[in-house]
Length: 131
Image 1: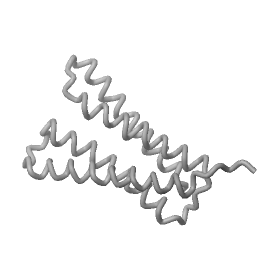
Image 2 (image 1 turned 135 degrees about the vertical axis):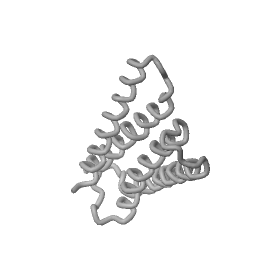
Image 3 (image 1 turned 60 degrees about the horizontal axis):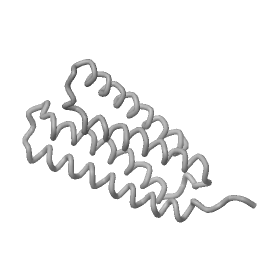
Image 4 (image 1 turned 45 degrees about the vertical axis):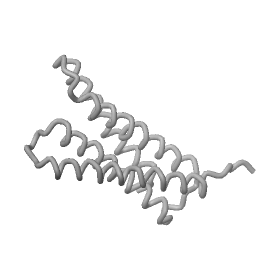
C-alpha cells in the first residue's frame, strides 16, 4: 500500500473520531473532551492528511527507510498522543497516574520525532519537479 493511501485512511479514521467527539460534546453540553478532540482533529486528521498529500505529490520511493520511519512514527505517535491524552485527562480505566503520564509523554515524543523526520523527508524528496 502506498504511503499516501495509508496516511489518508488513518486521517479519515481520526477525522471521524474527532467529529464524533465534537458531536458528543455538543449534545452533552460538556466540553470535557475539548483538548482530546482538538488534538485528534489537528494531529490526526489535518497533519496525517497533509503528510499524505506530500507523499502523493512528490516522488518518494516506498523503499525509503526515512519515509517509512516517518509514516509509521506519525501513525504510532498520533495514536499514542491522543489516546494518552484521553487516558491522562479523563481517567476512564482507573490506571495509575504514572502509567498514563508516561504513555502520554511517549506518544507525544514519538509524534515529535515524526515531525522532525518529516523535515528531513521534505528536504530530501520535496524538490521542484518542473522540467
